[in-house]
Image (tube, rainbow, N blue to C red; front, side, top):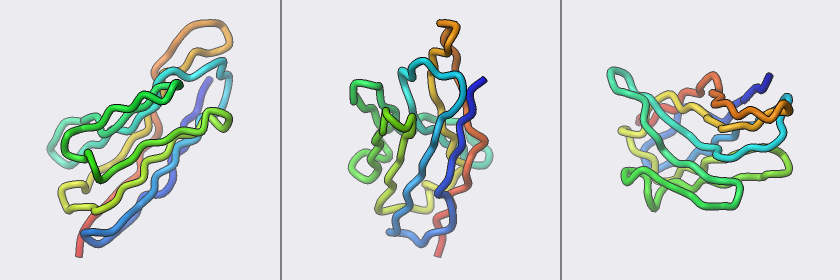
Length: 120
């Protein structure tokens, strides 16, 4: 079994910054892709940013230039630095990881979600 534990959400004013963290633990052999998704009220869950083990990154157009995803492979941890936050960034942010476990099979795991609220 694999667990993803997120931290770092909260309330911030427009223009502010937050840093989210997500640590994976459990029967991990390797992690391919780690990323962040978000879901705002009444909207579908959408990809925010993702990164491969080799460092390739992908961002939603709406966050390019403001958000930065990074990863510490030794700690199985992914980070999302969010700058110049806007009210439209308000959502529950979910960590996601594509994990190869010890038996060789690959599974998709999700964190429990962390609330990010951008408001004055």
